[in-house]
Image 1 (cartoon, helix red, strand yellow):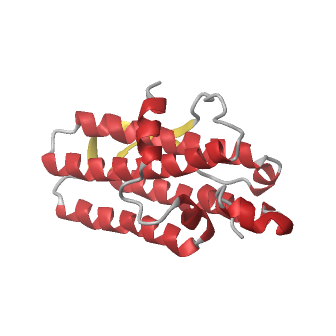
Image 2 (cartoon, rainbow, N blue to C red):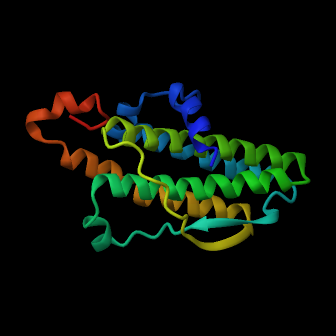
Length: 190
């Protein structure tokens, strides 16, 4: 797909992210600040008449975290799973935005799309910096389809608070004590 070109542009400079990738992974408060933008989107949606009903359904990825399965995956598999889920959201929102007939809803979906693009870029950059490269894309796993913007925002928030936070914790926990300073440059916490 056309992800590689878009990702290269986004990875070069993540415009709306106030902190660098290392800050993102090492500082929970930075992630919470980005996550709070979703609350702002919900408020914008309330002010936008009819914004909760989308003209076309959005495919939602599987965001439920199965702890035992998660623990048996490598960091690369975990980051690939998070990127895949983010891309499913991103694609779904992009399609919904392009089919929206409401200017207000389109604006809301554009903001959400940019928010998701930031996360895709950050997690993809983690994969690239780990030296493992980007794994071949697997077929996206969709768990459901909805026509409600509030449900899209809810499930997106679940992904950020679930799998993304677990990935951040795993990065922090797996950084070897002896290499804490050198791995911080690679996106791991010291």
